[in-house]
Length: 555
Image (cartoon, rainbow, N blue to C red; front, top):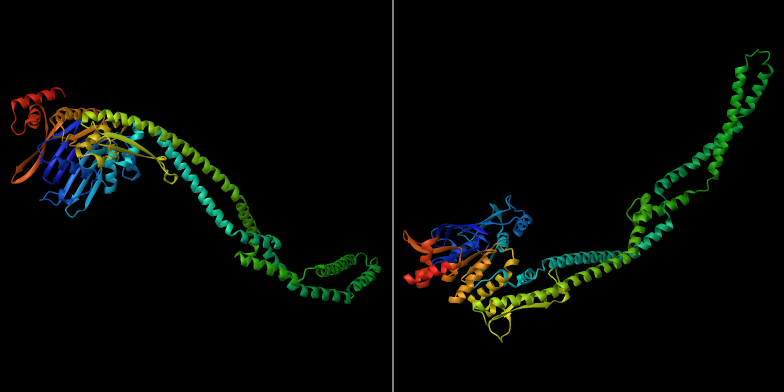
């Protein structure tokens, strides 16, 4: 609820500080005293469009501060949290607007600078204004569906529909992305299959390019190695070294006994030398045979190395990476081959999600039709006492084309009205005058009061053009409404004023040659005098005072 309003330099209000209480608060005063200026000032704090005409003529800026007390589960706190502007204290909300003469303005929420757009969103969440010429909240078409769901206790159903719509959109997005990817991959299918075929034909081995290069380098040296072995074998064969060693060994062996052991070491060495020489000869022949037995030729190695490097260049990889490239391309082709199955699964999920959404949305639509009839009946009961006995309200439930379905369901809800029987139903603002429109809003609001979380309602001259029993009916409904939500009413009706729990008088006076507006809270005799003035005009009679007493007594 609104707890305090501070106004500085707004039109003819120089400085004004007001406190408000729960229940029905009425503002009274003569025409032109400045009641509408109070609403304009409050509108500034709530994010309304700024007009420099609101700044007092002798000032260069206007400042308005509105303080509210809200429950900690009020949706405004979530809005501020999402915007990064949630205050530490989530019970008291202070809105401030500073308007400069150059047209620029600044907005603050609990001393945090915010955008005017955010301030306006906050204002729409915590207040609802109904006047003779400008309507918001429940008379605005984009709010009708929300209010109908509230009166029918369908918020849970609506939340489920919104959740199912979100799930449907999510799986549709996945299907769209998968289809796009599959289409892109299919464009490359010929390339994939051709590349895989080339790689399979080549059958590249791991690190093959390095191995081929090493083997090629060896083959380039093989002719020199073979010649070296041949020369060594030839030299060994022509040296008679083995024969010479055997001859020396035989000669010394014949004299070994006579040498009494002095030839033993030499003989052993000669024997070893013979053996080593024989082994060396055999190793040379074996090495020569291994070189001659290798069937690989330099030409075949060159051909293979060229093929590996050519394919590597084609795919912009190293030759040693060709096996991994083959595996990668085969995986891509496998994914492509599985794409149809994946798309089929996603398509089935979309069908199921759409079915779930439509089923829930259709049930919600049927419940809305029932709630609409209940709303119509309830509002029609409220219209005759408000001097709208010939008026009717109709809740239109329009089934939407599929491409217009959304989180709110498959239908569009609109509150229509007609002022007289026999004429077509139309939007409320087109069929009702200012006063009638405000009373339409009052009738709707009374019906919806227990289902709404708005913290403050403002009615600007909802009783315009009516009096007597009708004015009393208006006041009674405002008082009933104020039991659930703080209500502020600007009124010229003594019946309405008397029913208020708190009454404020707006006065205009001349101070130091300047016109100024002031507001005082009325109590006791002062309140009786104001209501008597409203009854009889500027000349207050005893009869008017007596009538004022009766009105206050029965309030």
